[in-house]
Image 1 (cartoon, rainbow, N blue to C red):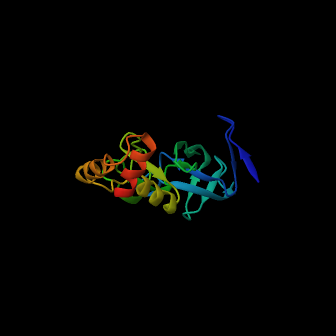
Image 2 (cartoon, rainbow, N blue to C red):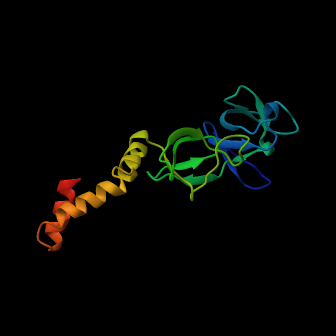
Length: 161
């Protein structure tokens, strides 16, 4: 069953998810799923929510996409994902939000985001620093004992790390 709201033609369906309300229960902004519709109030249609409560249909809207993760999944407010700090390569799982009072914020210049933990771990593995500057210098010094052609030097460095 679907309902079209007259004021803006937005369509809502049972099991429609990622809905938000600016006038939520208990004073917190929450993401809801529609469980049903209730037309027992003669003044307005109400929406039965997954929280067990009801809201007038005029009080809800579809949540907007916040961003897309590195592994191609759209993230909406209230969704969780793995966040990696680019500088320290530390990983944590956060619920994402549009303000810091309700979850983590999207900060693309500082962090990278993944929905799948295995992809996040692979990113860390590919970007972590494994050798000190001294290790690299030693490998280069050992390599120059070989011929100076590029492939030989490159292979010598790799062999000496």
